[in-house]
Image (cartoon, helix red, strand yellow):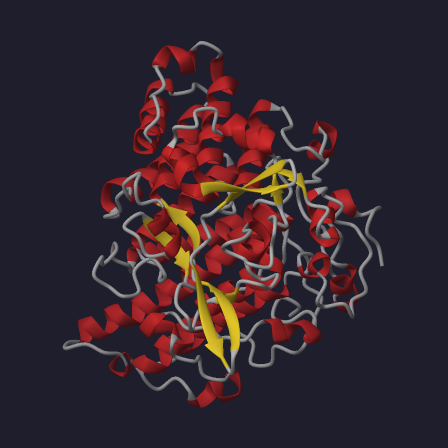
Length: 510
């Protein structure tokens, strides 16, 4: 099936176990060549589950995709011309012709879903082989303990599969659906894209099984936040329901995270600890906060490379991706906001003051053979508690009859932590639903800037308000589906069952 491997030349982007994650991902997943003989113990399964998470990380580090999809094509930027490839992405010129041989080109990488399907196939592999193993292959003092561990491993594989499908659905809309294990993943058949609703329902199905076999977080675990738990399942469900517009279900999922997950907001004086990773606020993260996990901060896989300047990245006199000063001060109209004070700085270049975000400034220097390497040791923060509070506020705001009071409470929880004045009910309710939703979206912008969220927040906002906040997409283009990415024509060459994303059918051809 094409979902397992679509472009052989790109499979090298996915090397399971090429990173570590404390004690967990330090284990290299066993080669798929020996699938038939490599599932004999709990330790074997643990190594293979590591591959599910490593696959997600590989997908996100290809062309810095977590941020390229979630932050670049938005209203945050003033100038991206320092890097023409990402300037095309910012301006939503996603149909630029790129040779399929140019596997290094971010415009190609971002149109190819192979990394996500490679991760999905690892989940499929785990689920298949775990179910062939007898209970006594798992650890536990009793058979009930052994069964519980077996089901917990299955739950993690289901979470990772659901996460990949949800993420692809937000990027491409309709995608092929595959939940089967294939011994030979090099064969390519003609699997069509299926409706996004089917993809999201499959993800919900996986998560409902997964959460039944997971516990809420163990705060003492060295793997907290970087392995899925029940709270991560509910957080993912909350985002799926928000994307579907099922806001009553979104509220219930958020309630489960907030009330039962064991998470807490860090203090306003300690924002940096969120991005270093594994804070009390984190729910699900991609681990890269140690030397063995970290990215080279001077390469295009790292968000630090694009968004930092000297002294954090000595070779960058100014940031490569330049924030819009106007948008920054529109969001932070109160500059006493602890988020602004703690997370932003500036560098002068001539008469111009360039502001930039310091969320990903945990840079360490490693010297080898007399050469200094600068490593970015920040986790990718996928879900955290503030996000869920604000997503619940959005859900209250987006109901057919907006719940102004509860939206106010959640907004003010986050504003209080930031040290800025609370909204009043009169402020939020005077101008109706669209104004309330804009207030929520703005608060998410302040809180989650450069956390892979802004693009999807603006899409959900526009679906309800009907007002475009994208600098390079009109309301008519939005309605026509421009906000979903095209797939690269090379995928259709290999799989005749695929069709191009609707908006891009006349703009990106073979």
